[in-house]
Image (cartoon, rainbow, N blue to C red; front, side, top):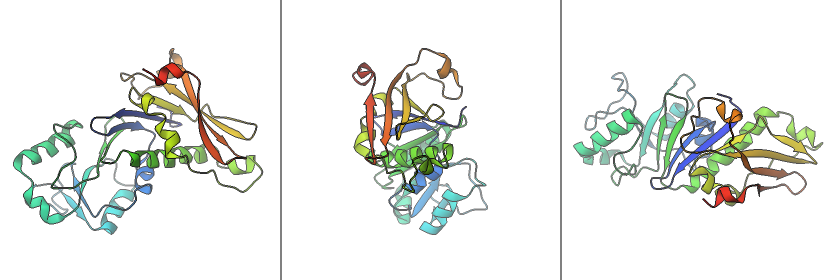
Length: 253
């Protein structure tokens, strides 16, 4: 799969985001604070700390959690955060079964937000390279998405600021602008950095509307009748982002 894309599919009932191109670094770097505790949903490693009640590996303390999130040697991460260690003893066998299923099947049997855990997130690396993240507060995703979009631009155009002959940084995308894309995200949308157009001191990022059955792990979207329906535009002089809708019908389905 082309690395120069960001794909987003949103399930509104459970605040679930299926994404490609949004890295763990994008996610972790956008967190308002590092979680104090993680319950790992990966296979148990007996050499690491194991919670005796639930049987899962746990990571406790913000420094240890930050180290886990930034460890480049870890290839697969599946975890749920929790607020207070003593509350793990209150988790029922049924809830343990739900968590096991969540880590094994990559989907939820019940709400992924647990009263006893007080978790804000669930993070699941999928085998096909996509990522599922559950957000208690969906607005947090748009902070993550902003960080991802800016990173992709910087990686694609490392000298971007010099193209405009000024040493000014690209501003953040207003979350209100990104939220306008929600109607597309419900079926799936793809932003292509391979097709970015820079003209008249503006950056144009094309956005394609895709259906929910799209297989993200191939590049067939470039060879089908999928159409560009919008573009994110950054105006360097105004230092603002805006959404230019090309196909209004795609936003009204």
